Image (tube, rainbow, N blue to C red; front, side):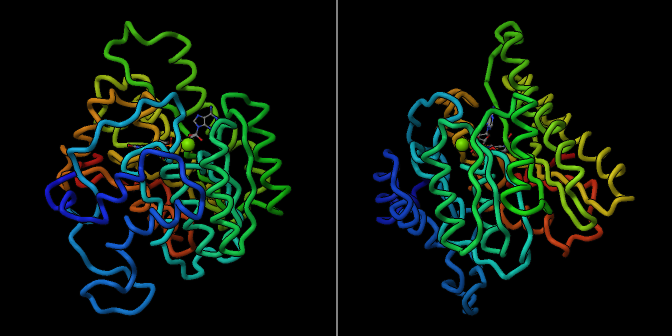
Length: 345
Ligand code: NAD
Ligand code: MG
């Protein structure tokens, strides 16, 4: 926390509560405290409900130094992070931009995928989320939040390193949603290693299976179901452009995702299907304290960005909505950076 954050009683309460897993209603209450600063219509802009208040992005969210994070096994849970990530639970306001659409979001239980899933539901979409079975506590919260919007929520646990599961994931999403209009390939694994000599073949294989093969299998399985107007969004990373020495295998997969996005955009343009990517910078999600970074590195996570802090998942939601919606009808093959100011090219 920076000096301003520690001065805030609200922030202190959030930090204190961040240590345990909370029920969905409690989660909304806590996220509400975090989100209170950016509550629509509550700022000095003086605008009405549904309009986010103007404020300084430097101080909008927690910034380093952070308290030492609890070590988690991958894939990790959002509820064990301190402070808890803000996925837009109380702040995201929809305006019908995805009314009636059917979306599948892999890794939709936590982090960036959860923020996209919540936003899609608030924009009027029915949403299926993929996740690993051990993430059921996070997934349950998202399912409840989607249902609270009166939208259909479909929970699809399973391991996307398995081609057969990837095919079933798409088939089940299509069957239970009644079709598919938006596919978000977002699930990933990230395991920090100091040296190439520490990366086993098993790790290399698992990283590529999760981040690259699964995207290929899931997209391929989705093809027969996507109509003109459909949108595919693949989560890449600034790591595709500025690879860190400790993320050798992960960074390569993120470069693959950029190439896949650009080639698929050309391939699917004649079918009226757009394909784009979001390239996040450092974002406060369970990917990081569950082996994605050494825990001590998280104390200053995001400090090296021009904005001086990590992004919160909620800060990516509008980008996923934009790329999914008809408003971006002329945008395809694009990689949209959400990085706090570090360049993606
Ligand atoms: P996250 O841990 O909240 O989400 C990743 C999700 O991937 C997990 O919730 C899990 O459900 C899913 N997943 C992992 N292995 C899986 C498997 N074998 N089978 C099924 N699902 C599996 O973390 P996040 O940061 O929100 O990650 C979302 C995306 O954002 C990822 O593609 C990640 O590479 C990307 N990204 C994150 C950051 C960051 O700093 N957090 C930066 C750049 C890009
Ligand atoms: Mg998760």
